[in-house]
Length: 201
Figure (cartoon, rainbow, N blue to C red):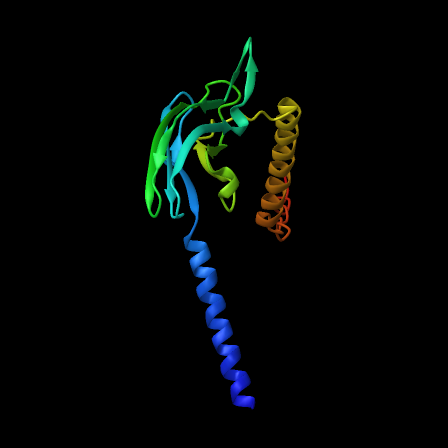
């Protein structure tokens, strides 16, 4: 009886693994990535977008939306930092069909020119039949501009440093002077010569 329970458990686990793998294989997935690892402000790059359809139905790509999160701003009378392609109407065939698109972007040269995430989302004619929405995030790395660093109260700092150096020099000179000075023995003074005898007349 115990052997039967173990065998049945093993069979059930194996079937669960097979079901999970087949369910994972039947999916449509969106991939997004960039052509370079890093960009400088003002540089133009390419965002690659790929949809792979492993479902048993054809998909028609309807709209593509890209949002550059940290570049999004309302400038004068329009939005910048996002792109939308409507009425694409491209077929991504079932069972391994692939749809590709390349989108160029330019890194802003103003204060928005920082590393950002590009959120890519796609709508299809079969969104209600997809296991999950088609979206992906690609990171766009922007080389940081060196920022000048200033020291506050630099004149006070330099004055304090000069005073410390002068004091240390005086102390060092005193120590050297005292360590090289030797105690000397008192001088022996020769006695004065005896008075010369007076000549007698």
